[in-house]
Image (cartoon, rainbow, N blue to C red; front, side, top):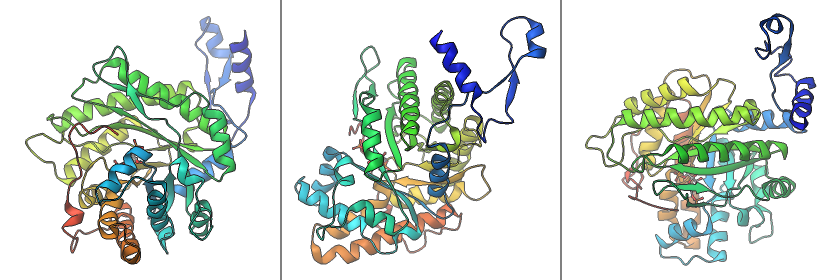
Length: 394
Ligand SMILES: O=P(O)(O)OC[C@H]1O[C@](O)(COP(=O)(O)O)[C@@H](O)[C@@H]1O
């Protein structure tokens, strides 16, 4: 009874997306088909208009997302690569370098932060969220609680964090966050099992609905790991399966598609496959998958880099923007925006300016790739170094 009542309530709501959108119900006798018309049960939240606006703003031409939401453990690995200890002071110094880069907002529309960073300030006492707002960059927040083994699966994992998510999200909104990120992973060499795919898709859909109820645009990220020696066709097959389940559950949870962003992996061969694919081949397979699975109502596709080199990730994005797409096709890179920056910085205050310049170089390159106008001419050797680590767990 309660479910029927809430369905009726949903149907009585009128919103710009559903007002002209009705269908004939097939439930009951065929006579009902002709007479009973119901609106599609699309959920609305107090934030519906704001969500759509935020998502559109993040998906604006020539801009993409800077992902600096590494959990403390992952950030520690990044800092260790330049000989720094994983302390709060070092994490703050590194994030300050990134978030105070002058002119960053020309190329970056959103920055995903880890919880610690959302509540931090510069050494001069300016909140990081205010540094972002001054550059017209939308602050975002990683809300998942990481991956743990999935019992009953083929050595696969599932993503935690739904407990208490509504109250955490409301707090993050108060603190200035306007979008969220939840990353779960799917492994091709491990199957993937039907159980792991279903769990990943259901978790993403529950998170997306909860985020929208609390004013945060959810970034939906089922990362298909690069590991494996399979050909690109196998990745395409798995990606289609994963995204079909994700959209099935997003729809079941009445998520507002106009108020989400996706963060997919590009469709590439497994990292250990005998042949590498060209950017054109990767673009062709990735766009094929997206056209088959992603409704045009979704405003933005913000790719992850997944261990590709900085140049590779930019070239692949550029190839995808050689012809018009139904969505804004852009980036939400962590490693592919930060590798050169970290190497340039080395933890030394005297290198901060040079490191910020190298961040602007990468951000601009990806901005051009979003517009389909990037050329790799003159790129540094460091930016061409791949960052894939076999069997890497975050
Ligand atoms: O599990 P963690 O520590 O959050 O790290 C996962 C990382 O993966 C991402 O989702 C994508 O990063 P890459 O672009 O480096 O693949 C980042 O936003 C995030 O920092």
